[in-house]
Amino acid sequence: MDQSGMGAFLRECRESTPPGRVGLPVGTRRRTPGLRRAELATLSGVSVDYLTRLEQGRDRNPSPQVLVALADALGLSVGERVRLRNLSKVASGAGALCPGGLPPEREVRAATRALLERLEPAPAALFNRLGETLAHTKGYERLMGPLGLLDVEDDQPANRVWFVFADERARSVYPDWEGVADARLAELRAEAAPQDPHLAHLVEELAIVGGAPFTERMAGPESAPPVSGVERLAHPEVGELRLSYERWDTQGQYLVVYLPADQASEVALGRLTRTGLRAVGGEH
Image (cartoon, rainbow, N blue to C red; front, side):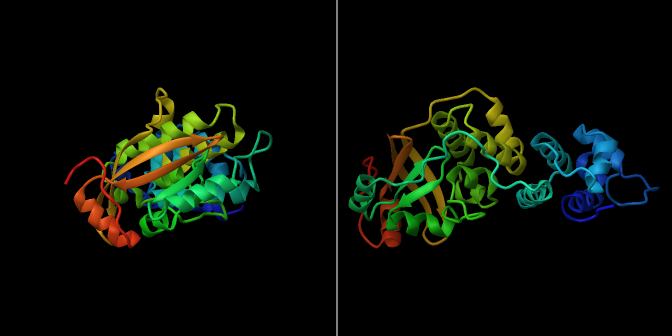
């Protein structure tokens, strides 16, 4: 029996999850302090037989729906969900899972690069239909870099949708996380066609890692993405910022520019970008 990789991790999580954490009676006659297979099967809706095959490595290709159900039932953290998702990819031998369909546009046109240069020192960045960060100003790097929004994973471009739903730092970075999450998902659904296999792959990944906060939004009605507004950021270097943003669409990509929304943010952002950016909105 193969006890390595994904199967071993699932068993480890099950056996380390106290019954009381998931609303089950603790009892006194238990061979393990964690959940029994039958208990996890009931909580997740996965059969005991299939759960056994997963844990023993006899089935290495569970669907994203099964992984989501198990992760939700076990109450896995974002970090644990990321590990489960990575182990499942290794177990199934999956590489690039997006055959067919045009790949997301990652080439930055010369005119767009020139525009970004002229926008310095304002924080501004270019994204494609999946929310991948393609190019940005130095002002954006100084603002978002310390927050983690420019971190890459598996040699893929940093993704602002992924950060919101799959990075444990996001809820601290965005005091108004619920509204930001709604906006990011609205952007994703508006930019990518429903039949887009690249979108489908990203949605599957986020369902596993992001869990209910993502899947419940995906199941809800679509809404138009905001083209302007104000976002609050909790920055580790300068404290809370209120930033006005504007968004412009351009041939399968979109540009977002941030400016301070009030005087306090003007001062704080100036410290980050090392120059003066005037506040918008007249809040002085």
